[in-house]
Amino acid sequence: MTIKDHLTAIFDADRTMRAAERQLLEAEAGKLEEQLTAAVEEAKGLSDDSEQSMRLERLADLCAQVPGPNMADTLIRILDCEAPNIRVAAAEALVDVAFERYAEVARAAERHLERGQEGPAMGELPWVIAEIAEPSAVSLIARFLKLQDSTLVASALEALAALGDPAALPHIEPLTDDGRAVALDEYDGDVTATIGELATEVADNLEAIENGEVLDDD
Image (cartoon, rainbow, N blue to C red; front, side, top):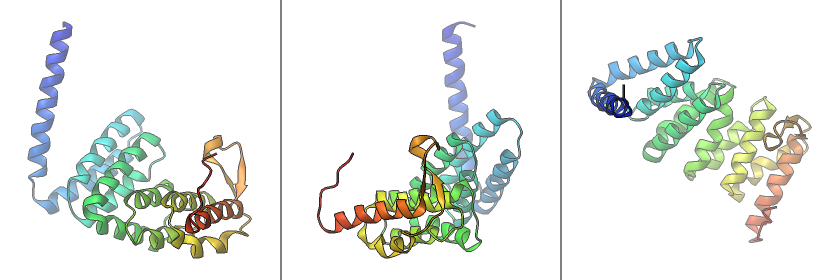
């Protein structure tokens, strides 16, 4: 095949995929949610990492286009993967959903918190919530500070720092004496700090914001 032939094949495949997607999304809502959820579970069980990534990244995009609380839960299931590229796709899809239907994502996060779930998704959800920055963001992210896994607590602290709302201070200050150790991502896990040290740093920054001080980016 020539280069032109390959390009034509790609265009044809893309056209076919778009048509199939349109037809899929026209399916009855309940059956569509059921089938997408089943497809996610099937993909998560695959041993072929490449195939798993391809399916889950595509499913994240499809799930984001289907309204309903079940799809928010299913997106969090995709988010709960170890592979960074899959988590990125799921997080971006959740942000897209939350901009349009924030309550669905917030309630799905609350359900996972109520079940005491821990894992990769619980480290990413605070960032999704902070990205939308709804008025309830501080109180919802603060619930992640009560998780047992110090890595997840650190992620919630960093999300609150990124949110930059001094209203988080009462939730953060009780952690300033927490001695649990956590690896710092910016140093590829080679450097550790305590939750207390991170909480103190975040609290200091939020107090500076509250007082109208200019923070040093360094």
